[in-house]
Length: 256
Image (tube, rainbow, N blue to C red; front, side, top):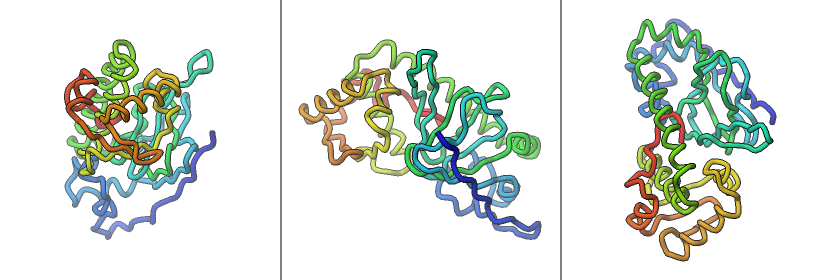
């Protein structure tokens, strides 16, 4: 995989009052929501705008964890390669999600673009300095990290205790919940990832994923509108199949 292209934002002058972050479409959903509009310039002064093409990498597992990223547009995946060469996708990221949380000095996973993505890149040390000035920002990032840990635990249940159909139903409900939180239509889902990606996330073969989609379609629980678009026709039956309630696994702000 290749790295994406980094594009610098226009430099801001000390006298500039209005931050371009104020016009960001995902600001109210991301870590930036912890700051008042007048405080956003502090973030603008340390941010770099990054554009990544589909299939390219934001960072690799083992790279120095020097930056934190906020996804503004598109879909990304985070993955690990197992010792036998198999790939495990641990999560999908959507607009407003944080990418690059790390407990160690290196990233524990790789991050790749599923579609073309745009991200805000923050130097970790500069961001940590802002935590002193804006404690609410630190609390917001800590909340995301806590949610990510909870999501990882839920993923273990999903992979270890559910059938293939239950896994896919939970995944679709989770996507629906995420869409609703982004003020999108929760029953009309855009799935930018491939069937292979979904399989690598749910611990299924590509063939199993395709069979499960076909089964749900024949049962008139979903409608396959296009290669990457589905409509949920019977939410109650999908919920019952998932065995996890309305939203399947509760999505965190950091990872799906």
